[in-house]
Length: 369
Image (cartoon, rainbow, N blue to C red; front, side, top):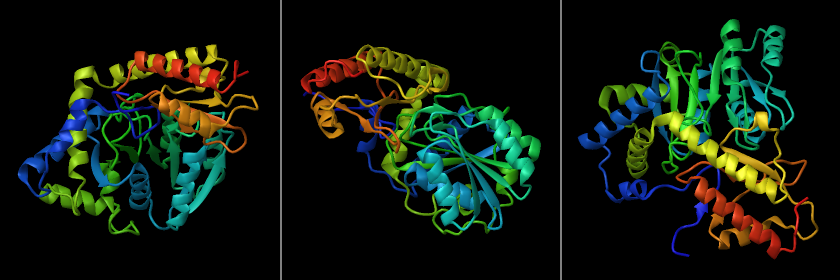
């Protein structure tokens, strides 16, 4: 094989050569050139959500989950009460981390093949006025379901509750506009739809909210109030930043703008998703979600109902053909997942479908039904 395997996963993703090359330079973390790059990166990130007037963005070392935990720890007071809307594995993770931080946490559960219901949120907030914040996953990466961000935001605004949005798998692809959405914090990361490499998260926080967050965090490293204050004062990170990751993201952002920004990225991912679903359906593989719930980010498929099917063998055979798939995240039914995001287009997606077809035939599965 004369190329790296294509990552059909929800992150890390396949990146462009330009993004890879951006990591070949070493940076001093206190150097003015690096600090200027960080400042410009933060400016561009705010522009994507049109949050320049109302929000600030705070970067943080680590995976996206680090930043989700930091957002909850910073924004929710220690005597706060978080209601988590749960329709999948990453929602459950949000509930778990809020609980581990000592915040009172209530979880409102729905089935994994359904979107969260704003009407249920409204009823829960009416029933329990002690709830101070709502935790919400925009695109539940465990299944690929798109949850109704605007409607959830509207309900929280009517009740005067804080909203913390995990937009890890949606930011820069699905529309997010801080001028029409009311959220206290929104979390994303470098290794998702911006097509950078993993290692850095960032949190958009409403300025009026951040001003009252001093002392909330249980953690030194994850205190976004302190991180923001130090960065505003010095232009620097409090602790050693992931310099190569930052440089790669700065380059990825240039390509994001060149492509046409969020609408163009959504259009490409939508094409990828449609090509994938059409091709896999033709092979007899059935998507887990109804079409109206499916975000063009990652698609969960039912595993073939055939005695010859084994995911590890299926995975290895697809990898040998140059495509890395993802195991399912569901506990009740056997599935696997295929990502639509990254520096790929419909051509690569069709090649992946062709490879899956070859693998099924090699496994003696003439039809996946």
